[in-house]
Amino acid sequence: MPERGDGVTGGGVAQRLRRTQERFEPLATRVILGGIFVIGLVAQFVPPVGDAIEGKAYLGGALLSLVGYVLYDAVKDLSGSVRQPAPVLVNSSDLGGFVSEAFKARKVEISFLGYTGETLQHELYNRLRALVVDPGQVREVSVRILVPDFERPMTVPARVGPEGQHVDDPAFRDRLLRRCREYEGVLSGIAHQLSGNGRLVVRCEYRFYPGIPGQKVCIFNRVHVLHGFYDLSVRMRLDSTGPEYYDPKGYTTDLSVCSPGTAATDPVVTMWNKHFDDLWALASVPSWRRSAAA
Image (spheres, rainbow, N blue to C red):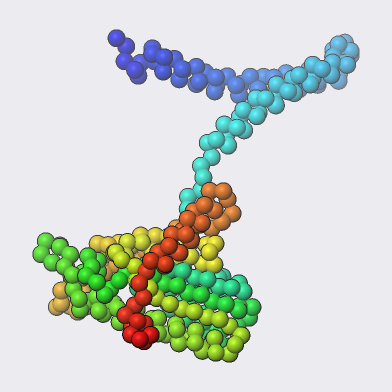
């Protein structure tokens, strides 16, 4: 029995026919176009030929229709072979440009889902400080930052145990908890200062979500979404002699950019906004704010 690859089966015959068609169609188009050109040229200098084709408008129209049909198929095949461009990737160090662009709007809304928010916090601090001097057209700023619940035992971050096991370390978690509290305190302090003049309404708030910091998401004014994944295998030491810790690094995370403008990206932006809003509604308030409210 013939093998599939020997060209005897139906699949092999079909492939041969397609290859023959692909070779024949361009050649036929060239022959038709060349024939039309030669006949038209000869008709200019040979009166009998000119008289013979005079008034053959229908024939010329038919030939042009045939050429158009062949060209249409060629363009259709070409458009089908064009691939969609790959998503744009940026580094976490590029967040400053997105933050600056977001602050050109009258209502600024920035949402973050990630580890500690350190890479974004520095950029936000600079932009909010600039509003103290010149608020421009900005009238409202809302910053929402979701980080893991460092008040609960965690798999990541954690201490590296025997054979690479993840061992919860309350002291290390507390270190990260204090860092987040410091970041929120700095942003909230500027927000209070800006809101005190009556011209601006500024809110900056941290909340906790359960789970590990697997992904990093930044949403700017609900229209631009940056998304990437943390490397959960990254290890670090607090000092040269101390233990190792699993500690994802946000500044090394690459982020894909998704912005509205096409039917393919609009639903994605909508999905991320809803996902973040749902997580924010379920997130818990940090202990430092609960104690202050009490």
